[in-house]
Length: 87
Image (cartoon, rainbow, N blue to C red; front, side, top):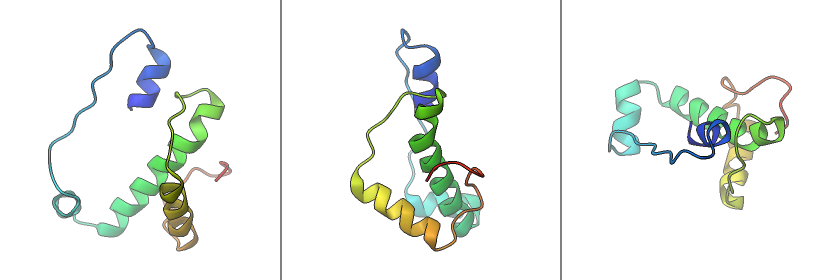
């Protein structure tokens, strides 16, 4: 959301916040650990691919995060991935 808002309104100071909770609390609130991982993998795919498409600003993603994303994709956490998007 932050990267998209910055793309649309670069002159506006964007504040992005969420409820403070641990990952375990978040997973419990959703009730489906696999869906949470799928959602995170899909969100990261968009963060990696949308800047090239002009939908959001580019954000630096650490190499170890990209490597974890690729491992999770290979292990089948792909229900929230965009079809035909570069990985």
